[in-house]
Length: 142
Figure 1 (cartoon, rainbow, N blue to C red):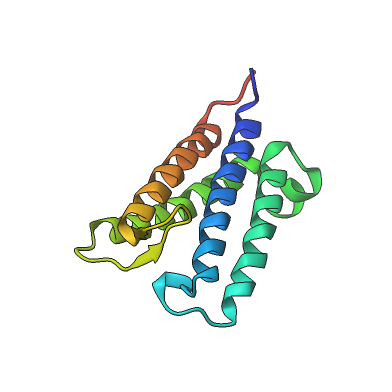
Figure 2: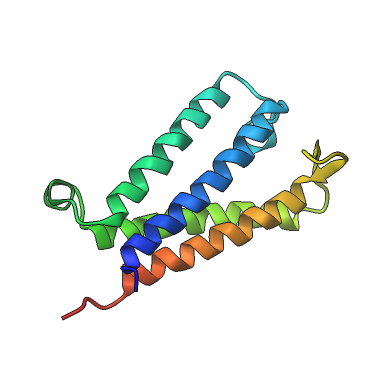
């Protein structure tokens, strides 16, 4: 059986890659942060997303003495991560329940609304959040 934190690292990496691909696709089509037009900050978000995809799973996967000694425990780090992901899920949910949303061309042809894309991202976010929360609040093995 896989360690809960290692599973949490895989869940975050999957979540991050899906978000990164979605963000890259939107920036490629001229849609920037929060649905606005793309500015130069799009490249910054793409690079920052790649850093998160690498660093956060690295810190979750196993204990790092330097990190736990000088910054925060792995368990507390996971709890903080869950809080940020819950905040992210809330903002994605607001796009889902919005009465009208914009559209972007779909990779397979046609168009996809932001609402449909947000539904997919919401499911991915909540699934990863639950796996990470399970690791963060699980009792320690004796």
